[in-house]
Each structure stands twice: as C-alpha cells, then as structure tokens.
Image 1 (cartoon, rainbow, N blue to C red):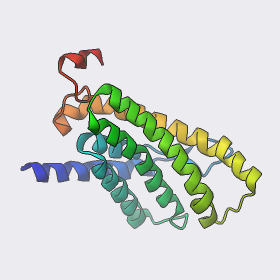
Image 2: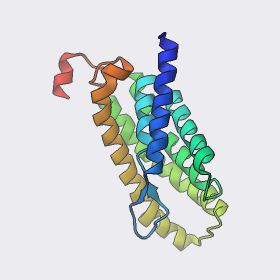
Image 3: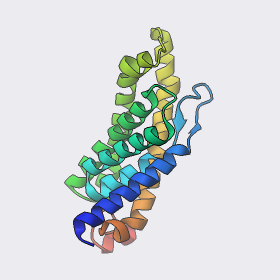
Image 4: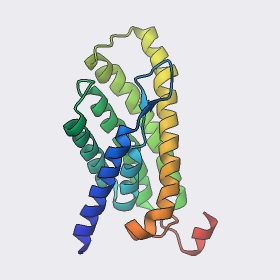
Length: 194
C-alpha cells in the first residue's frame, strides 16, 4: 500500500471511530442537560497530531456529515454545527503549536491553548449564533449564568478529558499508526522520561 493510500485509510478509520464515539454521549451538568459530552474529538485530535490540523478538520467534518446522514438531526443542525466548530477550535491550535516543534511540551501547550480557544469560541458562537438559531432567547443575566455555570465548566471538562485521552493514546499508537516516535517527536532516549 502506498503512503497516500495508507494515509487515506487511517483518516477513514479515525473518522469511523469518531462517528461511533459521537453516538456515546451523556450530560455532564444537570442544570444544562443539552450540553452532551462525547469523546468523538479524540480521533480528530489523534489525526491532528499524526498528520496535521487539516486532517483533524477533515475528520471533524466527516464525523458530523456522517452522523447527519445516518441519524439525522434533532437540533435543526445546531448541535452538529456546535460539535464541528468546538472540535475544530480545540484541535487547530493544538496541532499548529505541536507541528511547529514536535515535543511533549508543545503537545501539552497546544492542547491547553486549544482548550482556551475552544472556551472563547464557544462563548461567542453560542451568544451570537447557536442560542438564537435554536430559539433560546436569553437576557444578559441568563446568558451570563449559562456561560459561567454551563459553557465554561462543560468545555473545560471536555477539553481536559479529550486532551488527556489523546495524550495517552497517541503515546501508545504513534509508532504503529503514524510512524512517529511515541514521545511526541523527541529522541528515543527521552521517550523513557515521558
């Protein structure tokens, strides 16, 4: 199998895993049960670290198009748009930082920056697009409560869990799947210190 075909197979596999994980969702905050947690961003983050941010975006897009085609939408596309935008907001900064200089440190810094960026994007997109599109008109006090008690903790929890799971899995599969060292690009000797 040539390199291009191998890469396409891996992207397809990661997209399929993301689709399956998208089905397994659960509420995290009882006050806001519509904020559903899933781990479907993990395969996209793995693809981002393995092949770059563009591949991560493609996996996010494929996952959401496939879920729409198979399951349809119960949120008038609002949930799928949110899942795509927030997933991309998390993985692009992580991928850009990591691919500038591949190391354990840049992977961690990138995921932290991705989590912060996702928080900012979630607030802006919810306030000006998603909530109005879903017909949820909130006054300033309600919006502030939703941001502080809903969005910030939910996206913080999600970004930490996705980042930790990605970090652990990438170390285990990077050699076999992505053909890179398991220490996020450092020397083989430093892999033992990770």
